[in-house]
Length: 117
Image (tube, rainbow, N blue to C red; front, side, top):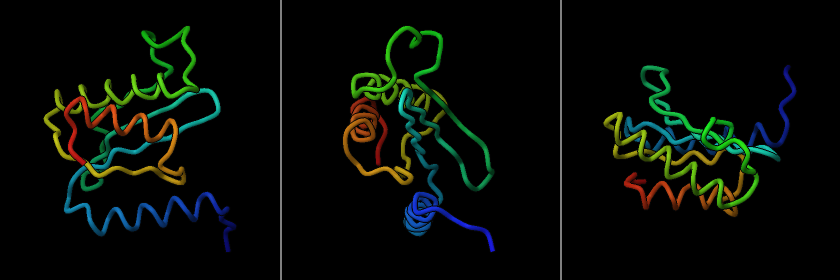
């Protein structure tokens, strides 16, 4: 039997709830580390990433990726790329992270830039 940490269990629990209510919509998945933040829009039906953005990209280098301002920038960037790819509605997948701080800043910036969730 494989050991699963509390973080892995929490992320699975959130993802299970998302699949129940998604209705076939792609999901906006967020990952944050101590130094950076990453976001991608995933179509679970085909298993493809439709759009992605992170604080490691060339235009974001030199700035810190570990604050709410950087998260808001990434949220705006992922929303612009999603709309360009033809995705307007997504389901927000916060993973094991609480909806607070950088995760919340990314989500609100994505909403303001045109994503609906």
